[in-house]
Every structure is written in structure tokens, then in C-alpha cells.
Amino acid sequence: NSLESIENTALEINPHFLQYAVVASITSKDTSNNLKIHTYFDNLMFRQYRNTNILNHSFVKSGLGLVLICTYSDDNLPISFQSIKKEIHEKLLDAGFTPSNFHIGISDAILPLNNLNVSVIRARNANVVCQYEQLDMKLYSELGIYKYVMSIITNPILFQEVEQHIQTLQQYDDGHDSNLLDTLIVFIKNNGDYTKASEELFQHANTIRYRVKKSEQIMNFTEGSSLEELTMLIRCYLLHNVMMRNY
Image 1 (tube, rainbow, N blue to C red):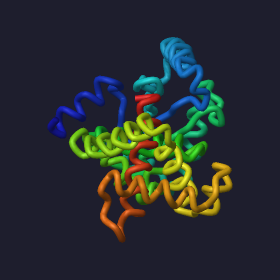
Image 2 (cartoon, rainbow, N blue to C red):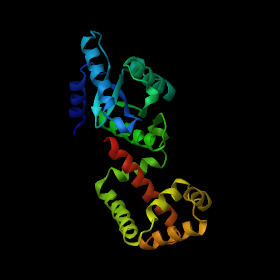
Image 3 (spheres, rainbow, N blue to C red):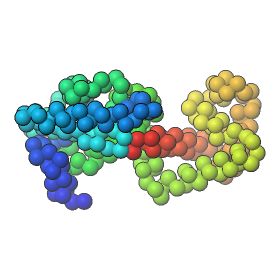
Image 4 (cartoon, helix red, strand yellow):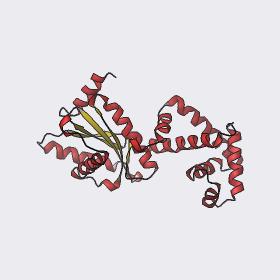
């Protein structure tokens, strides 16, 4: 889409949007009742319908969650990331939300309204990592390596290779009554620490070593860089599962 068409679409959402935007992606912590968030949204729309004040922000449905678009002019730009977080928290409270009940991902860079698509993607990516890490709020600038993990799982061509590796492990587990994939997940969540993984799985550390080595062999990972490959693979798999719950 052209920058002009993106800005026009944004102004169709709210003709009172100003020239710069920050976006928050909001999902419920109660995954057993994801649709609950849309009850909040419907109540909010009813309140705003009756409100005659001009608002420079809007809530929009996105998958099983919501997106909050906050806009600014040159005269009222936020002075810090902390002020952005505080403003979003206050807008959620004003809208009837209890912020602590939700995961909130924020595209903290203040971009022109015609870059709203970029802000929405960054907010969504921050939200997915926020869910994965079980946090209340996460800024896009805080994602670190997860910026690149998210770029893999949102690209069908790149993620296809991840799916193929995961399917290979699952097929091996099904055929041999083994637990390679589950072991790798615990191993990577414990940052490659065999002792901690063995304690969590109630298995001897040597058993964990054997399963990790077997997984590397099955997937033909290069010796010497296998830990990095396993880490990226498992994090892509887990974050993709989180993303699919809400988007």
C-alpha cells in the first residue's frame, strides 16, 4: 500500500487522527475466554457513540484482541517511553479496562500516520512476546533477539522450514514413543542448562544430553552451531503458537 492510502485508511477509522501515531496491541490474559475482550469493545463503542467529545485515539478489533491507536501533533508529542506507557495505561482505565488483566504490546517509536501499518505490526509483535514472557506490558524496543524471531514466524516462506523441523521431531516422537520435542522446549526455556532441564523434567542430565543430541542428528544440524539453531527453532515454534491464539 502507498503511504497516502495508509493514511487515508487511518482517517477512515477516525477522521480526527493527528499526524503521528503510537499503537498498543491488547490481548486478554484469560485465554479460556478470549471473546471477553470484545465485550469491553462493544461497551466502549456504545459509550463513545454517546460521547460528543472529539477523540484523537481509537480502539479497533484485531483478531481476538484490540488495537489502541494514539495520535499526536508536533505540539503534544510524548517526551519518553515512560510517558507513552503511562498514557496508554490511563486510556485503558478511562475506557473501562483493568490493564492488569491484559497483555499490552506497544510500538513505542512515534511514526507518521502514513506508517500506521508498521506501528500495528510492531505492536502485535511486542504483544506476542509479552504473552510468551507472561508480562503486563512490553515495548517493541525491548524485544531484542525476538524482533528477528518474529520476522521469521510472520514470513510463511521462512517459517516453512521451522514447521518442517518440528514435524520431523513430532513424527519421530510418535514413532518411537519418545519426548524429543518436549525435552527441547524445556531445555531451551532453561537457556541450554542441562541441570535445570533435568530437574524440571525429573530426568537424568545424561538423558537430556542424549535427547538433545538425537534431535540435532535427526534434523541434520551443523555440529558447533546446533545450540543456536535449536534455540531459534524452538523460540520460533513457541512464539508462533502464542501468535495463533489471538491473531
